[in-house]
Length: 246
Image (cartoon, rainbow, N blue to C red; front, side):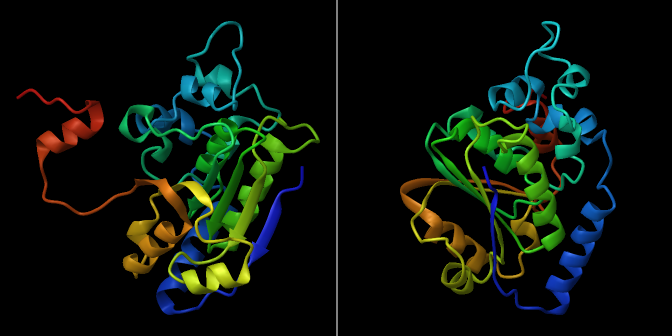
């Protein structure tokens, strides 16, 4: 399987340049290292049982819950996939896994970064599906391509994954995105995004991109951060679940 790639021109300004430089430097320098998944993964929805469900890991010695064991199931180590993790909770698992991609789905990941969510989606959509990752930081796209080739190439990978495509482009320029790449409006069953919209200067255009990509009845799964009034109960609920008892 060949991981397809397309690029379009990204309008430069001080803000976009700063974001690209920061995230480009982050991934080039190895992100936060090999322990990201082990330290933060369980709390953000990336537990080993879910990774197994997405075909990223298999059971070792009957132990499905050990991330240490899970990390040994791929030649390059599953930890590598999460080294440049920049997001919040796993968007695929919104609303208790009710909206997970299914076999044959087309998924577009907006601001895919190094591709951890896109690759998880590819494991769920299977070889009859399609996954497109979009990011405007070329270094992130380069790492996504490397990761996708590790998990889903015919040479040592797993052919049960969906084909992957990468697009270097901006969510805030939908006209350019659709005119200069192979993306078509109304192509996606599911659009995902993780920790990206808070970085968009023009959020209306970014949401328009998501809307334009979706098929009628499609789903937009968004996980992000925002500034709210400090609320201790809300913090506790975010950590342990919906029900908070004072």
